[in-house]
Image 1 (cartoon, rainbow, N blue to C red):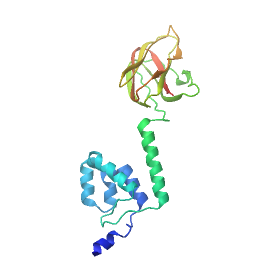
Image 2: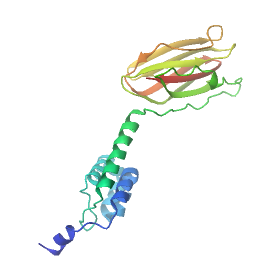
Image 3: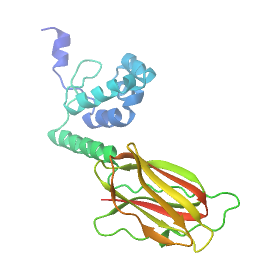
Length: 222
């Protein structure tokens, strides 16, 4: 066994927790490899933005399972508690980030220069028991909004509020499969209410508003 082989059997002085945090949050820039002293591959990882994602993912996995090594070939080891915590956090990040569950994603208010007063979002019907509000906002006139992520197989319901006069709007809610909800909102009809529940394929939900007048909208999920 050579001296280098002996060295490889020693634990790395580099911190497992620091390596894991850098790998998860800055791994796409190669910062984790810079920390481990692997400057050549760190620069390559930076230039390729984490090896187009694959290298980033591999380094995160290698760190989690405890086979990541520093520039001298010494394994980066952590305590069993540190590994358990790292796994739990990784699972929570993947579960939460993949579905968007439990996160209310507010739409920004949209209002044209000649718009009247917006509708107060407090006028929206409150979610019933078992329903979770995942997006809400108010605005005026036509706009298309995206960025809301729904769980696959979940039910969605649109809630709305419009002023007593001056509103003539059509709202369409779509996912990748097509239009889920289409609702005509008119000040001469019901000024606040909610649609029937519909099942969604999940993913990015697009809300398209056309027409004129102020509005407040919300999406609920169960």
